[in-house]
Structures are given as C-alpha cells and as structure tokens.
Length: 312
Image (cartoon, rainbow, N blue to C red; front, side):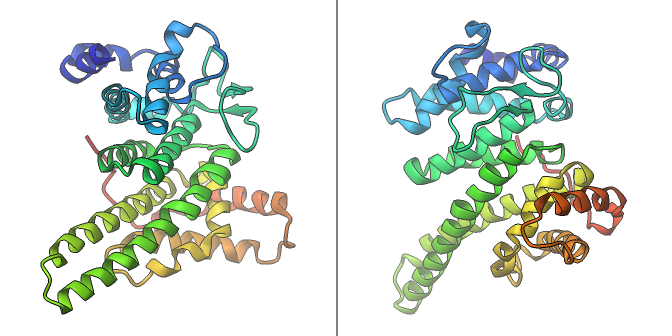
C-alpha cells in the first residue's frame, strides 16, 4: 500500500501509466474490496481485497492499522484529481462487465444491490466512510479527504443508481450530515455567544469549531451544486431526491456562506416542482419520466457557474 502511494505521489510517469489504462476498475476494485471486507472473495483476490478492507476496518475498528487506511484514502484522492478517471468510472463496470457491476452481494446494504456502476460504488463507499467516521471516530482529516475526493468526482456524477442516491447519498446526508451538523452548528454558536458574554477565553475556540462545521456543510452543498451544473441531464435520480428533501435546505437560505450555492439548488427544485405538481402523490415512475424529459431541455446556462472543484 505504501509503495503504491509513493509511486502515485512521486512518480508522474507511473501515475500517468495507471490513469491511461482502460481497465481502471482493477485498481479501484482493489481499493474498494479493502474497504468493504467482503464475506467471500470475488474474481482475482490479489487485485481486489487488500486496500478497501484496510479502510473499512480502520473506520469500523480502533484496532486496525490507521496508516494503511489513510494511505488507501489518499490513493483515491490522487486518482480523483484526474478528469479522465472521474469520467471513466461512470462508464465502466468491474470484472469486464459492460457499464455495470452486477450482483454485488458482498456489499452490506439495507437493500440488495443487484447492479451498480464503478462511479456509484465510489460515491457509496465515501458517503458511508464519512457517516461512520463522524459517528465513531470524528477524525477531521479522514472526513476532509473523503469530502475532497467526492468533490473532485462530483461534476462527473452520471446515472447514479437509485440505491446510491436515495439510500446512501441523500438519506445519509439528511439523517446525519445536515441534521447532525446543523444541531452541532446551533449548539456551537450558542456556546460561542455565552462565552463571549461571560468574557471567557473559549470564544475563539468555539469560533474555530463553528467555522469548521460551516466549511463541511458548504462542501456538501458544493458537491450537490457541482453535480447539477456539470451533468444535470444525467442525474434524474438526484433531482428526484432533491424534490423529496426540498425542506432540507430551508434553514440555510439566509446564511451568507451558503446563499450562492443554494441559488442553483433552489432553481432546480423550483423548476422541476412546477413540472410535477400535477402528478398523483406516490406515482414515482410518472414523476421520474417527467424529470428525465425536463432535464434534457432545461437550459443549463440558467445555472450560475462556479469554479470546478479540485482538491489535492
């Protein structure tokens, strides 16, 4: 793991060689198998198992080698800096299967995952890592780098499966990231106010914590915004889920740190809400059909442009 990291980090020739390979899924599959600790091996275990298992066990257990976990994460962050990598993972399936990975029975999930793209698997794993880390470890370094990798890939999100969007990305963001971060944010602001009124020296410390939380929330909004601006027509499930969770963003509308990003998200929600207003409640298929058609014809120049997200 250390050798792979050093070669990717220090040897441009090796990194370019790796990223020029069409079968990137072999390398990425190697990473994700390490995270998920599959209950049974699949395909060639020498290509698949070590790295993702290290990351998974590092997040799930304090007894694991954290150095390997961080190396695995940084390897993925390095790869995510490359545009070709970010695009091709949404076009490629693992183990030579075209487009999609089928019957991912080794992946623990509340719902069985019968097929998923390599890009969808990347999103799923990073979101779960963020979720587990924030509940158990609260490691800011791990949290920041997972968000950075997601942000790097976000403009290339394409045809993410419903299981990734509904059960993983938005539901986990709704149940944990936004709700929990919002509660922490409110609590920290109150602590900072009380400390300031009592002239205690902790006010600056609370201010730093509040700033860190706000930066985390902003990065999440940047990821959603980037996916909408970069590939609106290929993300109908994301649009559908934004409509379902539209109230999630209300509390941020007046916050000066988030207003610019929420303008695009609000525009998308408003536009598609007006198109599905006559659809019967519970008729998800009819709503999706309308969203897919509207996503093709909606002029993306109506969305404000932001600099492309690139974290290193």
